[in-house]
Length: 251
Image (cartoon, rainbow, N blue to C red; front, side, top):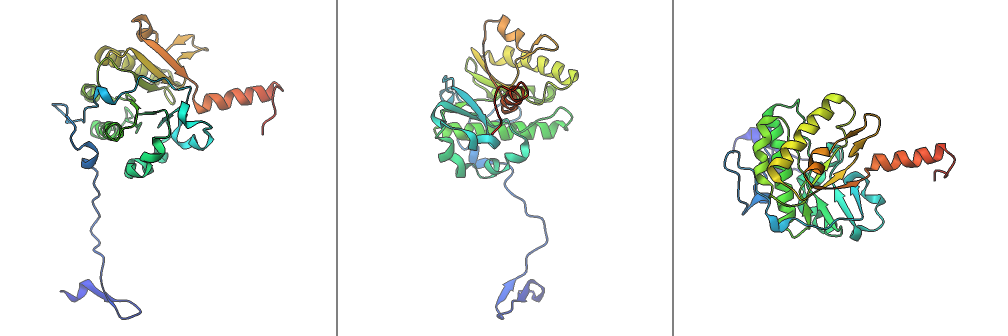
């Protein structure tokens, strides 16, 4: 063995030096999609219809605020959180399976495919979302797929979602600028036309009062049921507004 690969510690034991070449982790997530059918073009894992729940939870919590949940059995857990809070469950999903099973339903992973990302990165984010969601379903969790698309290059990922099943969409982060609102409205139309869901769980605003804009008018006009749940931010704003009006005291 070359001497430059060997060093001695204080106890005189011979140890291999660590190579300085970068460590390549399993970014393919092959074990997550073992047994999955795949879409024809990009090979996204296909979520099967039997995995999708039709249960509507009493409330929905987001992953980074789950410590505040009082009754997991009637609560859906979502991943509508900043991406930095998702790395643990993305990298070690098996570690969290038992915890996730305590919730009534699990909404699909939500790594962000921002439209200003290169298409290859958007596709990678969507692949991660689908791979984790498929894995959760395969592990026996009651899931509701969270649908995220980016630019037109990612639209074929919609082939990975079962048609005529409940889906979820989060509106956090899409309603601050008119440009983002317009992008979301276009994406909602595309999602609805391809997946044809009977209902959509909306985490966040479904109607913008200032703009007098119904974000989900297109699916509503098609007879699709919209089930809106207040986000953590919305709940916090309600509490703050009540405090300002003197209705309650902040604890």
